Image (cartoon, rainbow, N blue to C red; front, side, top):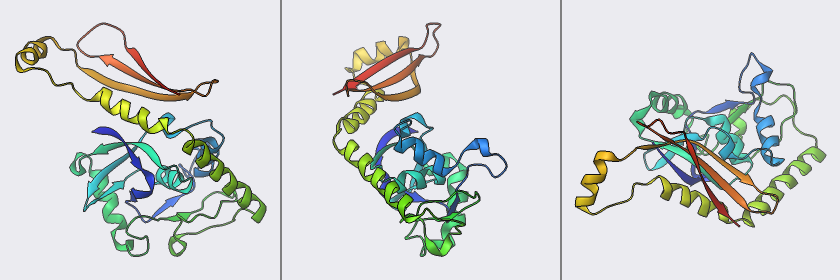
Length: 234
């Protein structure tokens, strides 16, 4: 598994539809609408949530975390961090892919998905929701829809004005890549190298407008404590 930045518009749904809530039996699990609100308000970013999982098949990347993918596509988030797996790493990829296979023509080969509304809360109209596979109970009012779309446009402007996001993502990838060493030096280093494992990533916007990415690293085979590496970008 690797972590990389990817355009959310290019990622495809494995399943033909998603529900608007994360758990049918518990309101505490939250909803797609709650997640949209937390991102639009600036409370959360995709870095603060478990990264969506994708794998390549037939020239495209397919996601098994379909509700979060729906949220990110609807909000037009652009470049987002994802976890990239090999297709056979997890049976969930093939199982969900097969579930959605009969509906590929309706979903634009996985670029859209139906939305089934379980809650009674009004939901925004979305170009990501495939009408022929969706079941809505109640939409936003025209005024609510206009306000919602205006907030999405404002979020896009904020992100466009802060291109450091991409460089931070690139810095993260570079940080996690092993550095090449001369042959002799590499053989000596391999005997005493402490392997590093990324256990947490968090991106914060500072009061000054500076963005900071904190990567928590753990030393395996060592009793030393975990430590943080901070990458800042104006």
